[in-house]
Length: 302
Ligand SMILES: [Zn+2]
Image (tube, rainbow, N blue to C red; front, side):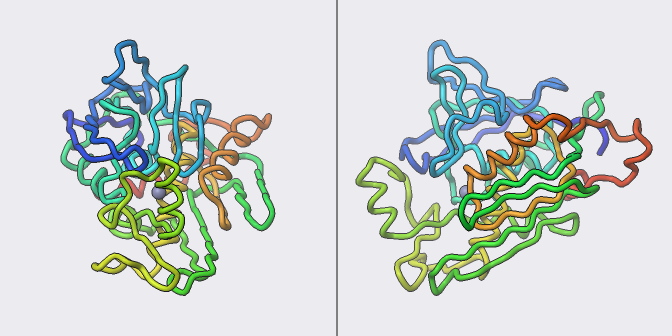
């Protein structure tokens, strides 16, 4: 687990974008050590690569969009979540459109794609980001707090005044099986918002095939929920995707309450911008941090 990893072979998947409704093909390619996760649009004549890093976050409205110049890639969070937890350090993601396919609204198809590609250890040592200071972002009754810790942990609570959701909380830690407990959890939305968004030209690809849709009293999906608390689990999935934009696996304890892409992205930005808030370490070289990392352990099924 101490070496960087890429994928063994190129793999592709096709589907529609949640917001654009357009059909796209995503291909993951093996990449050299120390190059990180990068995106490339193949539908643009003079495209450039976009590093999956919080510095390149263009917008966090409804989904997380990365950009470099005027080249944009949106809805990266579910793919990023799967790549990060499954321990992929280096990969080039090429896409013939501007939005990552939504597939079934969860990260499970991406996790299956990565498993199909296989993992390939590389010679370079993996580096980790260790949080050294507490970072706290509060907006009204929403908050995101990151505290130094020797393990990666997320505690998420949501509170929606809806009979199917209500108050839900979930803790992701070294005992959580991402592939079984988090990856299958789908994005969700409310019917009244979907109708309003579609009138504005958003969520054009949204359907019961790629989201849990709720009216005022129930989920409309005939197959029902995958977990009774699928909603907060999906929020954890999204949060992992947003946190991955720090560019390294991280050692920190993260508490999120009614947060979302914007707060999660601001938390990562603050962590990287505050002087002395973190250090980068290579396992085995600093004996004072002997405990293996939960993220490394959690990469897990391989
Ligand atoms: Zn999501």
